[in-house]
Length: 359
Image 1 (cartoon, rainbow, N blue to C red):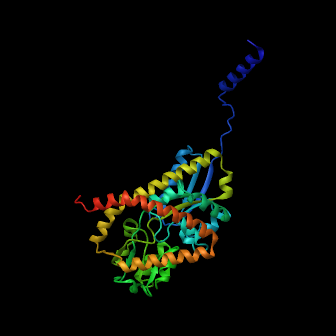
Image 2 (image 1 turned 45 degrees about the vertical axis):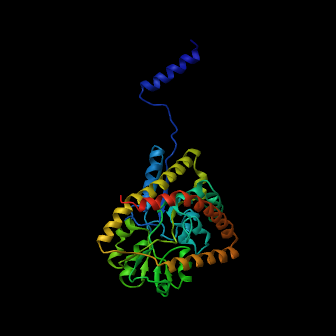
């Protein structure tokens, strides 16, 4: 045996005999803060941030930790664009149409009137040009985005009085967010943007006449049926609503390849889990709301017809003065046309038949 080998083994044996392990350079734990735009009481939405954090920790073996924060504990509900862009928080979970007043492009990856349903929006994001186009836009805010859940088609909201025709919207003070507020304004309503925690009190005190939020499960938690009994459908301004994870560009670039893959995987799992939770929980919640006095009403046909016309006018006008919007909306509109042609022959026909059966 060679002397060098013998000494090497003897040295190692001595270290082990002394109870001292060889030095191991462990990878330091990464700790991020996530600002949610939603209160903890909404286990679907704040729960999405918690689910994401749990998946990141599990996938990394505890070497990557994300702490979810409610609004106003780290950033305000509507302050996440500036906060994440500046690095005040490494990431956020939000509905991006909240920021359409900054630029209407924010709404295109979230929800716009008569847009894509949830499956179509995911398809545009992952297999079309949606994610690529939206990331090019968010780069201007030092943000990298990841789809982080979808509600599916939403309800049309809670009204203190019945809506019998489009004229009943005139002067109506309506809590509504995003690009849809432009549509409601065009239809004669007075849009008001409020975070979830403030909506009930505003309805109860008569500061607003109606409010839309999400759908039965979340709406039941917020108690709207107690102060505005008329529950309208569908939410034609939100045929689906995608939530996004925002990640600060510098924080993203600092991650290892492994940690980037973990963020992508956790976000993808969250995206699926949120929709599944809504689909599972909304039916039971709707039954309970009706038992509690909710009066289900479809929007009158003239409301939908007027809204569709005004929405297309707004898209044309916005496209004429905003090149970013024109380019992204045109791509989405082409994708929507093909998707609805396909769904007409498959999903829609199957759904109509099944929903007419006694199950």
